[in-house]
Length: 242
Length: 202
Image 1 (cartoon, chains in turn yellow, red):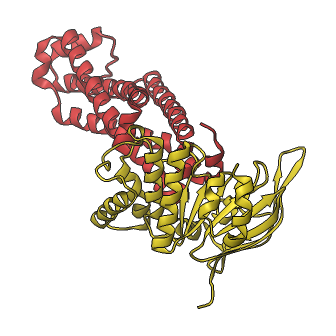
Image 2 (cartoon, chains in turn orange, purple):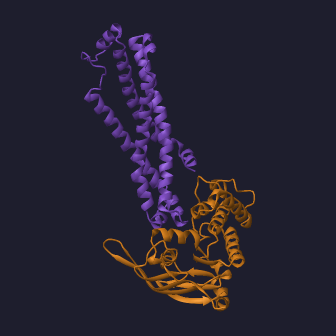
Image 3 (cartoon, chains in turn red, blue):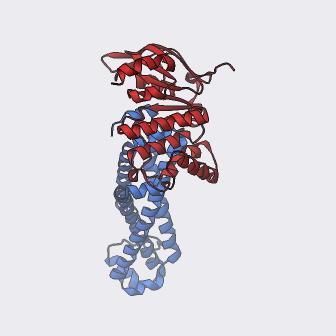
């Protein structure tokens, strides 16, 4: 089987016009991400990681260059198609969890299914299934405020998986968590990616992520610094994790 | 879901609703007062007609209805106008407060019309509750006022169907105002780009 590319980014640049000065955050990025891989985008803050991330998620449009998801140029999509893409193809996980505070865990998970038009009962049973998968059995009736940070992020993982997307975009999923819960979330993501063949793309500067990544993309100063596969990586991690 | 959002921000919803209650009750009050005065006029009872004149109504010979004076109408319109501005203000705040929530929903694939629907639903619930409360408050106040001024005899000639129509009109106006007030904030929320919503710091 030939390896399929789920995400292709070609020569993307992005400028932010701040009125007096124009900041070019991305200076020409080329990337190809294969289906089913666990990819980490690493880089210091301000390197354009999050910007690149928003491009892949279709949240922002590049100044020049193209982003393809499943061989579809997302610049060509209208608002309706973009919403469809975000709903069915992409699952988001945020640094700040971003659960809807007035909804219970279950309702948060079923929300994307409502957007996708899944009938109520099917959505509820799938929601319960997902909550069990992420290890939150019996907590479905709790509001986000009644859950710990790690549990909230688990709800967010379940929510991201709701419509069986092909890509999960995780923007610093462990940024607001302590070491141990962060590790739990990472291994949960890894598990989900292996079980369901989902491509996980995560932006991070958390070195714990490296151990589970199939591929690491280093971003520095708006350019791709280097792309390392897992086997090349092992050599380096010893030195860096200290 | 809208119900829950309202409950979570109960106090502010209450203020929004209260603006509406006051405006609608004023509308209902003036409408129903006129209804009652009309009924007194039509009844042809000289006692009622005299007391109408005494309380400052100008009765033209042969007329069967007492239209509200232009000044009175202006005051009602102004109060409704102020009410709409108040609602727009409150709803705009509610949109800004929920930027992150809206952005998250958009990231999850919510269509613009879904976002609009959330706000419109909330506004209709508030509008309905506020209008009904306001209409009955105003109606009761008008009836009580009439009884106080013209004596209990008035209860025999109360024009029930006319009062009912006035109440319905007041409630419908209130709902309309509430929806009018939410329209701009809701469209603003729906037009927002998801990234912008994510950038807002909490």
